[in-house]
Image (cartoon, rainbow, N blue to C red; front, side):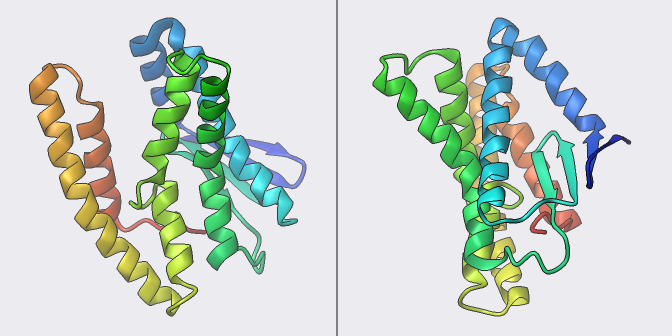
Length: 199
């Protein structure tokens, strides 16, 4: 289920999971939710800025709980290294904003902490996180695209298992923090179902 909008030549689809994430953030973070949402907006802005720097415009934007998925026109030429750069621009923007907060002496504020967490999370080389998509793009420079996809999927599968174990350990230790375990389960389902977020 999704809501559709149009901005110029670009279709914008807002998935139901996006509203679920918004409600979750507001419910559990309270006043800090605004700063977390700002860090998310900065993250997606990094992707769009990198895309614009390569002279490409998306034909469709899909917003979901996992972030913004950019659908490019055929022949946009953003595979390989350029695709990896676009993927890494999101977490790069978050880490740059955390560094700025560190320099001005506010590294423990809600915006700084949200930016750091989001940036580090999306650097994990697990699809469909940005690090996983960047890994596939870089692998495609050295091998055929289908093999790069297979290697990236296998690497994601191997890495998501310890992530799930860490999430379970965190849940046992805190008895309430299940966020990391929920993320690991979502990533496992993504890998099993095989939906492709690389395009």
